[in-house]
Length: 544
Image (cartoon, rainbow, N blue to C red; front, top):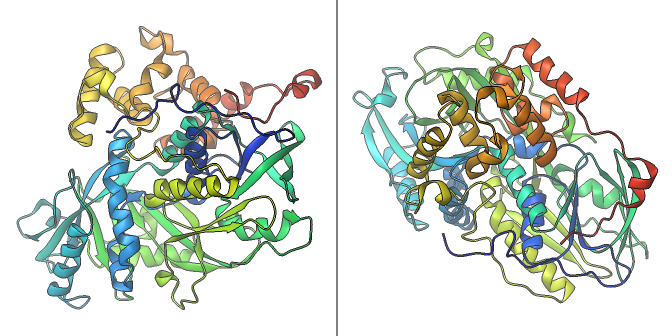
């Protein structure tokens, strides 16, 4: 990794001009909002980010959890998007090897779907559109001999293997938020922007959160509200002169996933071609499960967060997976489902699967600066954030250099534990060995889980503990009080769901009673409300 400022060495937040509490207010605590907050704060601007729910509550915790170029987008001639995403894969893999790692994908060949020559051409382009250092190239395989052929129907004799990456999407959001905070940003969860009035010099903002309503003055606003980006402009942001702020339209496309008990034991994932010309993935998940998705269903309505998987979607995913696996996947196998709403920029495409996954940054400088983020995908979040920070600097008349290309995310720099880096996946295994050597009493399964979640910052969770008893009471199997306090104090976790389904996926492994115990502990140990004196001391400007 190239040398970049650490959080303690980065540009200190500069004082905002008189009358402004912060330089930039960011609305939305998904991957784009948190990525932009991190980038802006690292360039020295004072930043406030507000999120109406928990970080990554919606789209950013409901992805297929892939760092990928998007092989299927080549068929829609989205070469620029694919190249941009392919360029980002290894940048991201190197930045946080504890939550992202390389993954090999197997595509069984079905001649009725696409001819072999077409797949070879597509994979050749996929291999060569961007430089690779870590990920191996594609190749053909004989499924009768390859380990990935065993779970498949015997009709599939030939296949192809190529490389992409896997990511813990919700933790990726949190790591960006942590880095943003440590570089001076203020991150407010469970806090809704209920009013934003613009004049020529700035924005008068009203925020509503657990401590009531607060007002602040911002020089610029970034609308990174994801599925709510259009409604924010139409219903919350108000220009003083009465101009219309919403000039774009979103298409909200629901992508649903199912999780079933582990179908195969090897470490490859599958990409399956369907008769409707779509694809689905079947991915190793949480050691004991297989993740299958996704669907593409356009939705309408005022509350994108209320979208849930339909029985027709479950049937679709089961049917398409069963076309390939020797053992059919049925409704009865499904142990968990989740749905996310993708905010795709309306490009007049009739097929939701064909709507572009690229992003658009729209600037409005008719008064105080406003930047709206339209669309995007998790793989390109860092580049989107860099472009957004460049544009905010242009609008503010204060261009400052980019810095995140080559920077580690929180916990991603393993060198204090293992020395010089080599390959991200190999580095992580060396890190696990070093962790077990330092804390031999921790146990293999718990140690690996903590290493995956926190990376080089795992010692901040363990603290001065010298035995399992020092971790406090075991609130649920494998989950101790010390970790829960860390999640409350350092990662904005407030509920059992925050812990079990976003900061981790322990909810998949725990019985209902154990999940309830975690929720009860979080409620019992919640921070008390601020009193009036403390409220008066709240400042929204970033802290140096």
